[in-house]
Amino acid sequence: MLQTRHALGFAGLLALTACGPATSITLPLVHPSPFSRWGRRLSVQPFENDRAGLGERIAAGVRATGTFDLTGEGAQLGLSGVVARDEHGPERQASRPYTCHRQVPEQRTRQVPRWVQDPPPPPVMGAYGVPIYQPTTGHMEFTTQTYTEMVDHPYSCTQLVRWIEGFVRVEVRILARTRPPQVVWQRAIDVSDRDEQTGLQGSDSGDRAPAPVSGPAVLDRLHGQVVSQVTSAMVPRRDTITFDLSLGSDPRFEQALNLVRADNLEGAERLVDAIAQQFATPHSDSERAKLASALFDRGALRGFAGRLDDSIADLTRALELRPEATAWGDLLRVMRGLAAEVDQSRFRGETPTSVPSSPEEELPARSTPRPTAPRRARPRPR
Image (cartoon, rainbow, N blue to C red; front, side, top):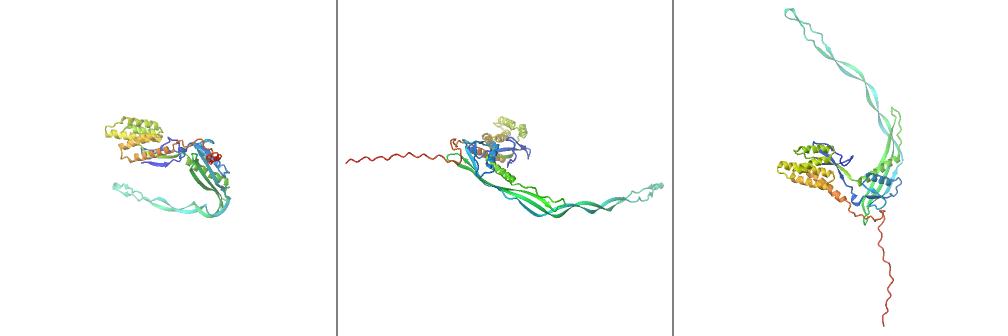
């Protein structure tokens, strides 16, 4: 079974965890940036109507990812934008009915059981005048006990509310400086948030006014959301894949699994590679099964190490030996899809280095020919 999910916390390319069945492992998969095919050199232009330095924060966020080299000259990509809205509203206050709670003592009763022993019966005289004593009996009696318990008692009070709302709308675009230039990404980011604080009036614990609210703090959070949306669209996307390694009858398969779980993918690949080399020419069904398992495990490990061509070759050969292994086909499709993404994102030198540094700058117009004087007509002979 193959499971794909987005990795929220990603700790390096070789970070992995064990989960699910005994042979199940989870490995990270990194999709390339969709902008890599146009180059790594990026120029971030000042945003229009940007009074809060939002463009600078986006540039800092992109720089922190390490995906692009920010430069002012010779850039292959240009990021620019317009801040259409960046404001917070006035502070507002309101009150609304609320239910407060207090703990009050309450007298309650309960039945407490008590064992009471009955009087012993008189002995019975046996043979030779020896008394025989009968076993004693008893019964259960219940007494009423009064006790005090603190119980919740709701009552009406008033909740005081103070809030302030913020709104940010930014139009961002990325221009590839090809000939002619082309917009490769454009998005309108519209976010809003509010800072709300509450207090109480008419409470047993005393009145409590709402804490202060801050409009600039709301806008700062919204700016962070804009930066996050822009950088997440530009950087490589990270997923995790959960699948089952194929454990053959050779004990080296289990050793390889333990190495994978110990974060040693290279050592695990060496073990399954040795199995694949040993049974490269199988002479029995058992050897063919070992070869198929070794090829699948080696292909999976090579794929997560970034060697996609070798991975696809191994997985394809493994499926030829075991066409009924549908889960192997799922992983092969994942690797083929990733290889297509990598090929599509490969930089092909389409962006010349002599284009203007500004993304809005037009290409130089074609020069007009110099006007020539009109040719004088030759007189016609009479």
